[in-house]
Length: 104
Image 1 (spheres, rainbow, N blue to C red):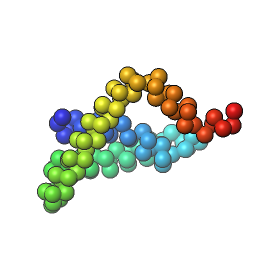
Image 2 (cartoon, rainbow, N blue to C red):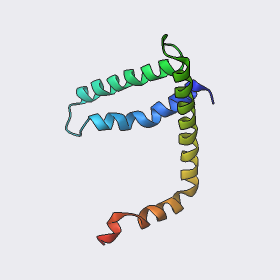
Image 3 (cartoon, helix red, strand yellow):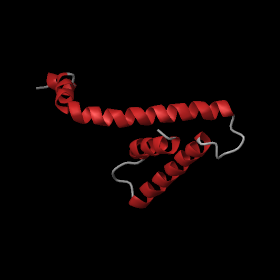
Image 4 (cartoon, rainbow, N blue to C red):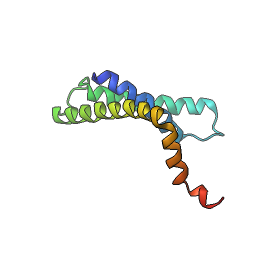
């Protein structure tokens, strides 16, 4: 997998959750958009550092970040496929380990 593709998968997968951490349901939409834009800038900086587009970042750090990003993207991609294939079994485990079962 190429680094840019790996980063795109990671950003697409985690960006909504990062935004959700910093927003709440009653927040005005324009504030949510501002927060989402700020997070996109931060993620863009990480991508630029990982791909060596920002000078002055040590090569070892870039190499390590690249390895983490590619590995994470592969795991996210494969996990989605396995989840789809094993969804019924996953739901059984989810239900069996839920704290809600103690309330029923």
